[in-house]
Image (cartoon, rainbow, N blue to C red; front, side, top):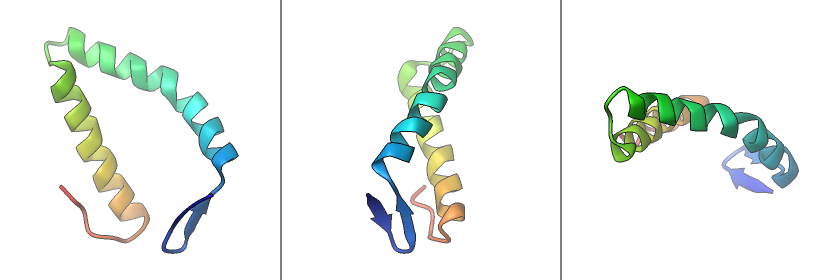
Length: 64
């Protein structure tokens, strides 16, 4: 189990969720690379967007 303040997620559900998300994420990365961005640029952009969304979801300050 992962716990962050009041957010608890089971390892099994997290793994299931990753299985659902991964194919589309890999496709998104490849499309952005084909659009002319480097892998590093794409991963940083995804990381920043994810951090912003996560901060909103758990009502914590954004790290970006």
